[in-house]
Image 1 (cartoon, rainbow, N blue to C red):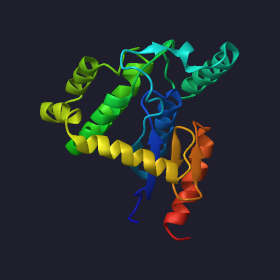
Image 2 (spheres, rainbow, N blue to C red):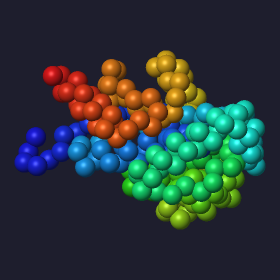
Image 3 (cartoon, helix red, strand yellow):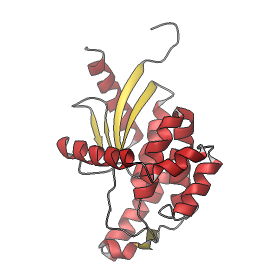
Length: 213
């Protein structure tokens, strides 16, 4: 490894754009880039396929009031650690079309993918936009310079549906029960938005295993 070059670190991440803890996990992965040349295989999965694209109140997710309050307090604490302010999380929506759009955007290259990838998170969790709505998604994609033909193809080409189905199957094979779930290696695994120090520790462990040490 030449000079001050950062070591390449591979990761596979199971994530969904309507999962607030996935947003926190994404921010923590970004912080790892100061330590590693991080290459991520994003396995996008739909955690609530039953949710309508028109959206619904979070109260319909089945959490008790006390449990939901505790989760949101924890979420806001984690967001504060990452320097972001979240809007009130009072509704949820279908992530299906957002996931298809992100899968299609990968074909435009990493810069375009990461632009729409991050914008989907901020649109939902900071701006309170309904990312289940195709019109909203089209506007977000256009603002991120996703080519028009890719936007159109995202919701018409069967291969993106097949990719989501494959991601879901792989998640089952690896016993993914939480989002985000991050693999740096088979044993260096993170389930959920754990503290950044744990991300860094597991990343270093994964790197050693990837290097065969």
